[in-house]
Image (tube, rainbow, N blue to C red; front, side, top):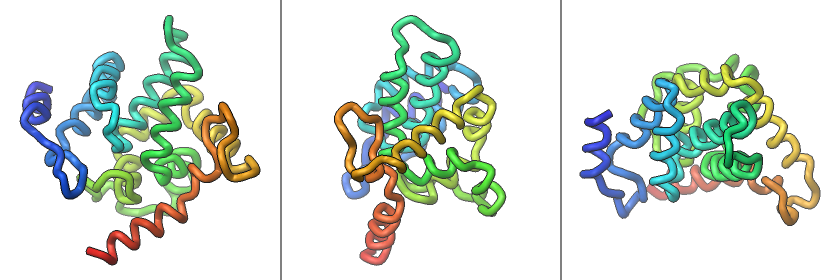
Length: 190
């Protein structure tokens, strides 16, 4: 933990990519989640409000879900959990689909556990996350995967495709095809 904290203090965000130069923050939140230290995880993700990685955003969504739904902690609300989930889905839509439909994806995706330090927001990051120990936290948390699946399915069934006032997600937030096309275009331009 101390080493990761020191790395985070020294690191900076690469201006060209917008990503931190080390994976210290992602490793640290993984450590907190695996050690069942939600308060430490919350402190970390709250200190990184603009970090778009699925490691940070999906950890935040899971911690807020547990706090609201399972522990019924004072000050924890459904709105807070849904807001954290919305940020997670918007940061990496591929991860949302993978977690929501885990049995289907886990049967067909091979070698996801070999991916390391994938860039933020992409398909590889989602595969890395969903093949890490973090997926077990989602599966083993009562109702978490079902909650995510219900939110995804609800948003996909909305018409028109834009979010209505007060809705969590709209169908456009879950448009993986546009995101994939953008990633392909970025890849071709490099």
